[in-house]
Length: 208
Image (cartoon, rainbow, N blue to C red; front, side, top):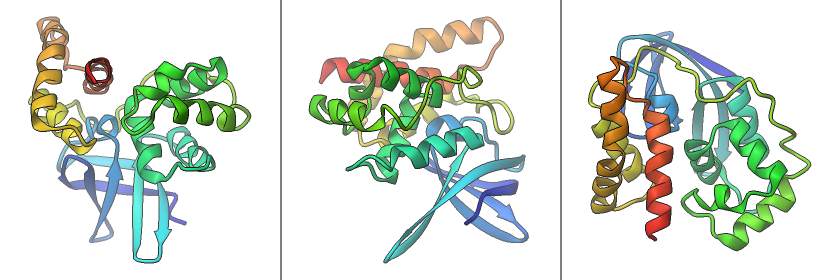
C-alpha cells in the first residue's frame, strides 16, 4: 500500500494533482478542498489510499491521515465506492461526517451528490458504529500547501463540474456564494474554497 506521497506539485486539474516522487509523476485523485491547498511547484505531502480494480489502479489523496481513514471506513458501507466516499468528503469534513452519522442527520448526507433520502437512511444505520464520535481536531480541511489560487471562482466552478453538475448549475452556485468570497477578500484573506464549495452544494441541493 502507498501510505503517502511527498514532493513538489507538478500539475493540477479539477479532480487530480500530479506529485513528483523520485522523478515519477504520481496522479492522485483529490477532493476540491485538498486541491485548494496545493500550488504547482510547491512541496506537499498527501496521505493516500490505493484502490485496486481489475482494469485500474487509482490513487486517492487526502489532506491528512484522518481524512484517509474516514474515506476507507465509508467504503465499508454497502453501495459506497471510492467515488461516492470522495464526494462525501468533498462536501463534509471528517468530523462533520462523524457528527452527521452520530446525530442521524439525513439532510447532511443528502447534500452529497448521489445520495438520496433512502440512501442516507441506510448509510446512517450502517456507519453508526464505524465512524465513531467527532474528535474535534479537524474542524475544517487543513492546507496542504500554499494559499488557494486567486482565481477561486474558476476552481470552485471546476470542482462543481467535477462532481457532475451542469455548467449552468455551477455558474448559478458560484454566483450565490460570490458575496462570501468578496467579504473574505475585503478582509485581506483568501476566499475559503472548501467552505464556499459546501455552501454552493447546499444551494444546489435546495434547488433540485
